[in-house]
Length: 181
Ligand SMILES: [Fe+2]
Image 1: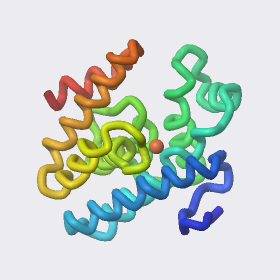
Image 2: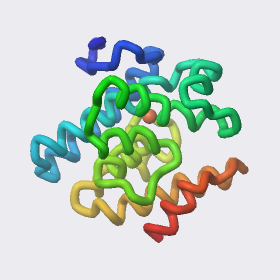
Image 3: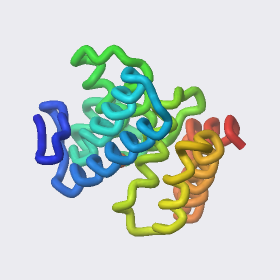
């Protein structure tokens, strides 16, 4: 399925038009960084595809997500990444970095390659989000010359938000923070 932004979403995607606009902005940011960093064809493609597919099931209903992932305890908001990665793998997607980026994009992963780290940053820094616009735009500019330091800062900001909201921290998020702090 190809939408008006030229994004190729899997046939099983369940995404609202607002969600597809978010996905388009994430992909645009990843493409911009890939060019600025001079990535090779393989890695640019991986970044692009991870961005295009990460929220493919973000608007699926809770029952469908729990059935797909057989997860009955974790908060439903954490399931769309694992569900999309499972579907892609079943469809024959072989790239581990793309699958891991999508699987863990909501909670983070301490063993990510650059693909997962780039998606985690782009999902948070894309300009359509309403909060901290100046700070996030500044960080988006830093990625191409200070990738690791910017990643650390984004991990920290996302973690602070989770704490402020009084939400629980996933073990994956704690491990990610301990790996970059
Ligand atoms: Fe997203």
